[in-house]
Length: 101
Length: 162
Image (cartoon, rainbow over all chains, first blue to last red; front, side, top):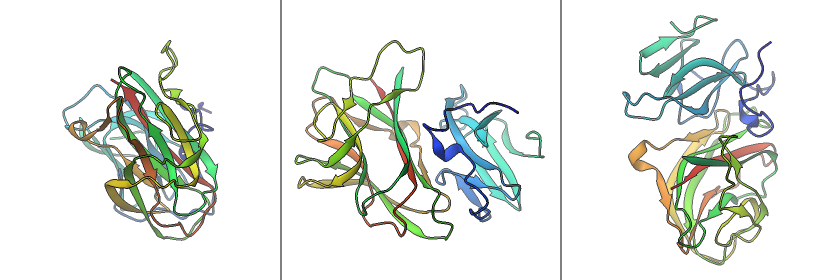
């Protein structure tokens, strides 16, 4: 099991909130949303580690899943048709359950 | 660049209230550039809209719980020039106001969010909000109306000293 990338006591919004929280509606996007709760029960958000890329003209941050870094940077995370998509320097990519393609 | 966060979680707010208030220190201390704000909650599983504002406020400032800015980069040898304070005074930071203070507020950013999704405000680089040292006002993150559920809120901000 991977260790959380951040202190979840300091940043508790990165922690999965439990089964009482509903799956996020379609087309919700981070930002302006803070978190996305997908149909697998995973909680997605943006971390604080700014990437070096400025090609999108916006800050890009590390993509966090259940408090753990995915290794990707993005300026947007979107939940659409039950899939997590990110937008960053490499354009739009979709989460396949293990990585973004 | 020296970056710091002020954040908390599991907080019960009193209603329409200031969540975070940071007042820049006197010149020639660094100016404060605010890079992000966030608000979320884990108590209410029902969809509801909540208004949120960034506002500046002159004295009299809110009454707060003191909060010490924490380094974003652990290797940074320096602490922030901003210290914990309960009165919103210059050079202090506080959270979760228990009283708003009589000072006039000026709304800088007015928004709303679904409490299930939370709110993340990341200004694009030219739009970051800078509070200059010696400014007679502090910057606050503010609920202009009371949320439907007062418990289990998490909120914070990141700023850098420039």
